[in-house]
Amino acid sequence: MNTVTFQGNPLHLEGELPVVGQKAPDFVLAANDLSPRGLKDYAGKVLVLVSVPSLDTPVCDMEVRRFNTEAAGLSDNVRIVAVSCDLPFAQARWCGAAGVKSVETLSDYKDTSFGKNYGVLIKELRLLARAIFVVAPDGSLAYSQLVPEVTNEPDYDAALAAVKKLV
Image (tube, rainbow, N blue to C red; front, top):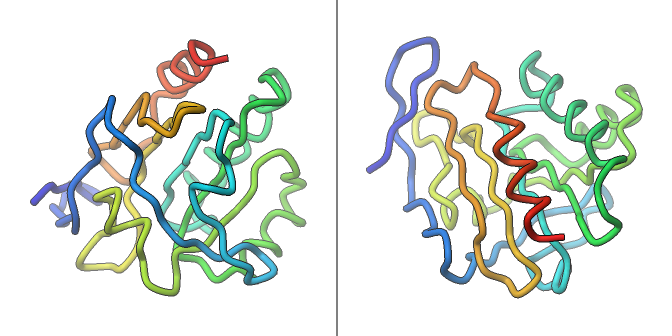
């Protein structure tokens, strides 16, 4: 079982991290209008899955705002999705307040299929660990980054470099 830390304290992750080069695992997430979204909805696109514990925390807020800004300089063939266990209504409220329009927010609140399938569900908190996954247009996993300390930001440059290699 993989672990991450929260302020230095270990937390256990459910599931296994997917392997780069293999087919990306599917998932069912809820959009802000509660409609289901899965991997098939992004077929043929470069999909950046930004896994965060909660949009209502300072680091997650900063991270998703950064990806929203970065999205402007990326190809139209790139979709950036922030995934959390926040309720879809809270995600929609946060996006409106933060002015986030270039990142789609999806919720894993129902059955945590994303968290389990991508190995980022924090067992003790039922929240998602901070991670970034980049799925190539052919559906294979091109990049994976699990942030070891939940309160730290990811390596944006490495993730964006992986995206730019695919467009």
